[in-house]
Length: 408
Image (cartoon, rainbow, N blue to C red; front, side, top):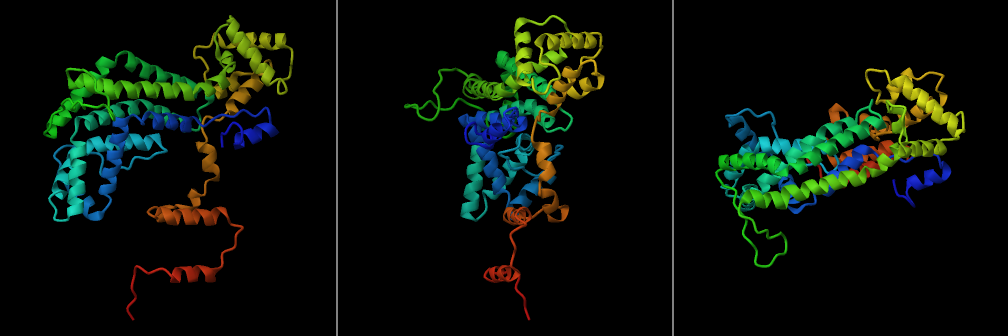
């Protein structure tokens, strides 16, 4: 879709050179998360969570977990494990958060299942339990919970209807600033994480220790440190945080370029720097066919008059829609630029909902259908022009074995 040379983006740009391509910010954020999760301990942690969720899919095993949750003495809000979703940040956060909340119940359930007579099932349960009862897993789990919690509000706002491009970038920069603050005070923040991890490990009856140092370094680094806290800070927290910050900065740089020049519409000052003035001139050069005037002096003068109008306002307007309300006919070019800014899409969530077939296919009566059936119904709904022969369908169904036997 967004290919620069052969994608849909390039074909649209050839037909409409003035069309601005804006990559979905929610998708961009999720790509940053996915890339940062390639750190080996983090990747292994998410993989263990996924395998544990898959293990408890079967009814007999799931009943053991449900019983452990009912018998738990503390307060638990989560009722079941959630599978880690590869495409949705919010589901990733809930998956990690619920796993932490149900961790003791999961260990008790795995311990019970590991004593079953079924060799394969008991072996899987024992292997999962041993993977979870590791210092690397517990610390990676808490690190993910910490970082995901910081980005969760940003992910939710990116999918809201009322947000505009200016607000989206302000929120993204605020999230990035918070991550950089954590990076500058990494010792303090990781000490809190390590303290929680040590307390959790003590509840699960094991201790966090330094891993053995391999004679020949292959899969993990051999750092010369004296404490487990220093080791896991160097091998997990700092690399994951650095990669996450770099991914957000690099992936949102295109959005920042699109926004250049538009920020001047919200500056509560009449004195622009040379850089700000050049950015605004580039903006009006790009949209000169849409503006009422092409004279740069007139446009800059109109911008200064607009800045004087919003200067005495108590609350600075950072939203394009709010600014459009107070902008009148005295500023026709500013009004047009605000209209363009308001139409720049932050995410594709709203537009995808408008033509999505899921609203008709996956109703509350069909909410538990399998993925295969859902894909089949979606294909039927999308490709309505292809006629379906009832006889061919019956012949196909007759070749499959029925799950229900009829006794005559």
